[in-house]
Length: 342
Image 1 (cartoon, rainbow, N blue to C red):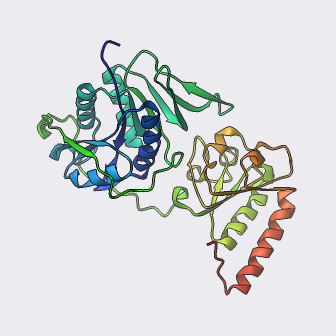
Image 2: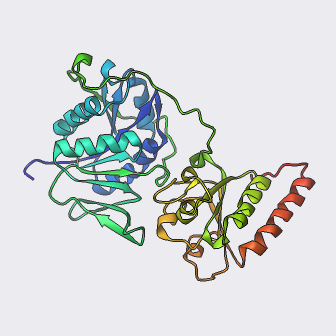
Image 3: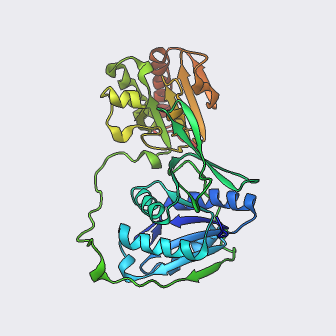
């Protein structure tokens, strides 16, 4: 590589003037990488009328914000956004470029990687850098979640990765923080675009949003069968929680896929997470390990789930759950029907 590449970048995904949470989380992760490498952290912001978001990006850790504000960028399209990001990357040469593993983020990252002839690690759950070689160490579960694979991009730049929402933590915003806003222009014409946005249809379904849940009761195949799994719903109802399940539970037909937690499902960070009848396979743990309090119930005292649990109960879930349900019901009665988790 004869060209010098420096700096860590984060693609700032926005929707209708609101920055996606994963982008703020990545600014926190990117800040740590940039500080280790002694380089600046940049945010890349594309859209229409998005300049007002620059100060928010800086407050969450960016040193610079690279902005392309253009009417054609009002709605996400691979072609227009790829042209903008590639223009910036070729001009400023970042050595690391992070994207959220959202539908748009994954689509854009793969298109940019192809155009720049560089590598891309998908669905990363851990990030670090080798300071001596200045290599991004992007790690993710592999071989069905049985091992963690660390993937390196040794020969091409920028080193790119998509990172799943909720696995990194955003910094506390500092509204007094100062940064540089760099505006760039791009030649885009609507009539040249090969795709047109005819209509944006919002998801108005009432399905549970596990990513935003404060309390989750998650069940695994250790419960035995679907009838026993009803105890998960009963406990969740009593304590005002959302219900989730492992991949095995979903594959068995006990729960719909949108309630699956883990590497191939949702990544969650609730205040309280009940892991019931769950062994603690790595593909599940990566989806819930950042929960504030993890309460594990398993009859196998050596189950890996206890390695990440805040509190562990060794015993048969079919005996323990009814007692917990009864206890919480009594507390609710004493408290007038509500339980405070403050």
